[in-house]
Length: 439
Image 1 (cartoon, rainbow, N blue to C red):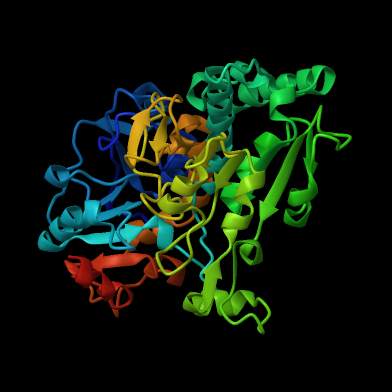
Image 2: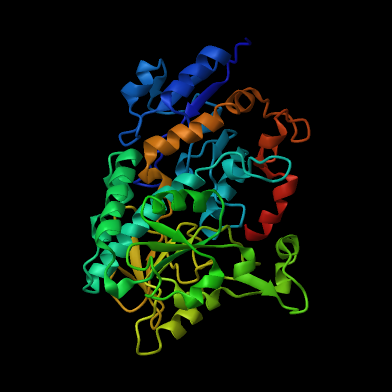
């Protein structure tokens, strides 16, 4: 074992009041110290899910600042005043789409000659992400959306079993949350759903890690999965309409079609040339009660739901079918254009008013209720941190031992990590120079 003298710091999360996750849990930090001789310290924090005593019992020193650490791991963005010159930072930067709200932070990183490694871009040779919280965003997002549905129905005068669902952060742990939701499912199977909401349809846009996490929660309830083709013919006469929730998972071919009707849908062509496709998700909207947005989205792709479509839905005299949107992806004015803002765990929802195009906190008002908590995995902080740390730990020795004074071409990092280096010594790396246009 080679002794590594480079000190590694785990920073406190001070960008978001609710952030309680950690990139390395105490046991994994202890194992890295023993196995690789790393010098790991943890910055003090009064809200971290793993406490200072937890780390100290694992032999990890807790310090007030990380001035002596050239390599610093975090979870979310680092506040501009906290950034230090020539440090190497590893966190979710939310800059690769040129997100305007994080460009000042990125510019400061450049000005300070720092190096930035973004977890989101740690990928294999096929571009598949290797480290992520997606499943836990889905788990927490579905719990919060079921809570939202219960509150919305109650506000509309409909007594319903979903009012028993709590917000994800209100449960002591994921196991307890699952147990209580499963119990509610048994109640639905025995007593049925309110007649006013039959058949109850929950649609999932996307089928990746986020969607699978969300479906894992929904599947604790009595669920009947159907295809998008079945939606128009689904009625209260269905034999499961009383005691089951209908689940439909939408894939790309359910959300878009070629502009040229003579062409069949081709997934690779859709990803390579989205401009050759039009969005078709509006055809499903009349049949969905709850929409879970679990897709990765960029402006080049069609939207799932536009402001204009919401305006049209609410322009008639009847209440539209769509009551709740669980926007787990939470791209502001993105795939769900009426997602006007990110919300916090203690105030997770707002009603989008299609007339004024404004967000009204709570569940009452004319328009769909939108759950758009940006930091959903932190509502399950212990479980999500343990999973994340378990994946990250194998990359920590290489990140800690690299010589960041080398040129980017000579920087000795595993290819998975090197692909995630957005900034090196104050310069955007070749794959990320496109971000200059947003600066």
